[in-house]
Amino acid sequence: MIKRICIILIASLVLTCNVDDTNSEMGRSFILKTYTPSAMLPETQEFNAPVIVWTFKFQTEKIKVFIADGTESVVLDAGNYSYDLTSHICGFNDNKQLVINGIEYGILITDDPSGNLILTDACIDGHILVFEEALIL
Image (cartoon, rainbow, N blue to C red; front, side):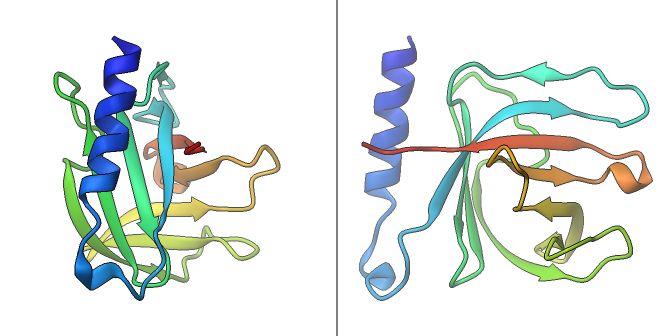
């Protein structure tokens, strides 16, 4: 099952490349590892396989969300989105508020010591998503 999911993930990443992207960066993919819907009531959902993957194209400010068949979406449905990084009162260091299609989703923490990417809206009792960078061999 995991092998099938990995094959689907790799195939979807390869098939999503198009002619318009030839001059932009390929993007960096991050696999959702844990999801906590509320900082005040932490019931963390763990993901052991790459069933939800967000690919950031930092140069063009685009996100592609992949969700494997049979997996319930978390925060965003599968698809392509535009985003902005803005200042926020809860931001610190170089971390910024992630705004996707005009909606604020929380602080994007890119300098976590563990190397993970974290999206947190815990400043106002929101969600916490922890991603691990996908290593494509």
